[in-house]
Image (cartoon, rainbow, N blue to C red; front, side, top):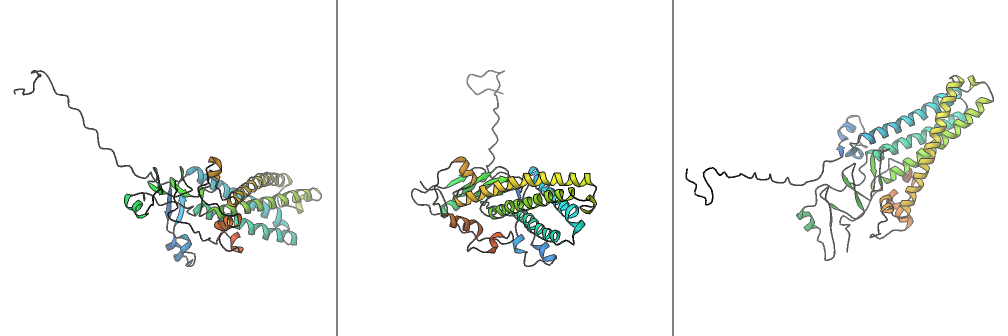
Length: 320
């Protein structure tokens, strides 16, 4: 075969340079959460009125967070066992024990309900992959307006939204990601998280008071009338409960105060940590509280079952 290329001999060969494979189209990162529609199950068991509340149950796929949430439930279960079985049930006919049992279990139920609502509620996730040319054109941006795009979510990033590396979503008014509730604390579930810290602090202080009182009382009379367990076993139960009450009472008390301070100053924990300049119009303290708990003020502020109404601008963007 004749070589028709200049400067090449019979034994010369042509090096074939392999073509680079085309780059994959960049898209949103894999979601760190799962949303489950539980309405069919609720209707099947007869909870028709509650079906709408469980239409989109939010669950974060984080093993560490799930372990922390289970530990939280186990600690609540341990405190319930010691308070009821070790301290109150041996003399349940006493008005003192009966009142303490009702009060403790009431706030324990509210604490557990607040924890579940915080964990299973969408904290305010921004729709994923909506940063398309068509959607940006629909915003009708004026001169001087800038739209921010999250490179991980490929979504239009509203003002005060931050990307969570655990949930792999941008969260509106994200305060922080809490492993103890296995979820972010953001615009839509901050109320439940604040109630969770409040009620945990209340039952911790209550259990601490009952444990110390029970221990002092048992020292002054026979242990058999104080508890159905032996004195060493009762002492161990009470010591662990006192330690748990002190630890969680102090921790949740500080967290509750921190959250209230952030709400009143209309500034999230991330914004305080990063010392971000306030590009938004700050509301008064009372309006900031109502923006989290709802309007107007009512007993529903303290209920983890009442969902507050949130109002915000869809095109809430940074301006320059």
